[in-house]
Amino acid sequence: MRWTALYLVLGAVFGLILSRSGAADYNFIQGMFLFEEFQLYGIIGTAVVILAPSLYLLKRRGLAAGGRPLVIEAKPGHRGNVAGGLLFGVGWSITGMCPGPVLVNVGEGKLYALAALAGVLVGASGFGIAYPKLIGIFRLPPLEVGTGEG
Image 1 (cartoon, rainbow, N blue to C red):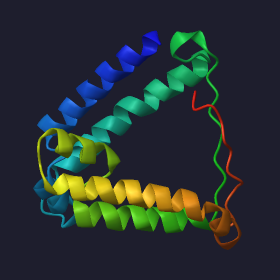
Image 2: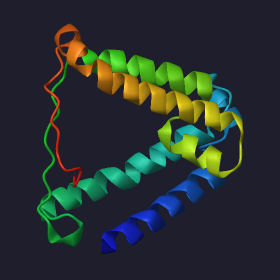
Image 3: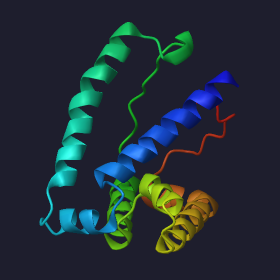
């Protein structure tokens, strides 16, 4: 329970960074996809430069926050990765938002973000409902239901 407050603070800081950097701004995102704005490429590149060595050090240390063992399993490749990536990219380019910036835009009071949030929720629910039928079509792994504790 004590980690919940930390996660909320980190999420709020992340949202603030997304908002202030322009990473949640529709015009910047559209400009990135049209190769007219290059600021977001720099933001994404900076995130990779910071995250890659940090993840390497965490894996080398072998422990996550709280002292639990760090386990990073390779995810299997399948046709669903391609279809999901295309669907995600199309949705991102049309709405100018992926799930994180949707919440940032809602928090900034942008009314159009509510439509994107509704799309995210309907899409995720629809995927969950359709998953048993999609397993055979896309050769997806069986769905694992857990406690949600990581």
